[in-house]
Image (cartoon, rainbow, N blue to C red; front, side):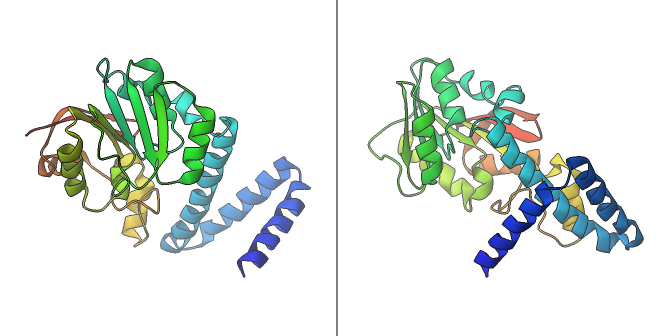
Length: 252
């Protein structure tokens, strides 16, 4: 069945590509405007599904634009500097859930730090190893719960867009603090109120988070309570680009 769907999708794309883009746009607009005749609670779920599909395609195109690295890494002010400006000299940094390694590379390039990036996605790690060659940067493919090096210590642990994917986050943070004895954590997580569409989805009984692998999205109050439960003291917290960015220190 999936093979049939893929074949139909490719055939549809080939046919669509024969239609001028201006005409395609007008057809899509007419298609969407037809929902004006539907009751709002019927129209909105379908329109949100179309919106999510368009957002996905924008992200795919943005990654192609950046040569495999989402163009947001160039356009979003502070997406890297928040981390590397908070890395003390001669630190050893553990970047968990490093993805394709863009943040880890920025830290290695802008601070005098040794950086280890860990991610469970083999394709992402292979991309990172092929793309980034800084002498103080290395990557390993592994699970952040079971495959971390137990014979190393780290001064800073980076968790950028990671915690929202995990269950038992406070227990996980306590375990990291106990195992590696870091001096600080640098954390980035998404907020729920990035866009009112999330509230619309929740009201309609739909999955409301921006990513299907998210188990929660934060508010400052939820984040503060979670850090307290993890025995981490928040030294700095700000909302930037709709995300929470925080610098936290173990309180024990």
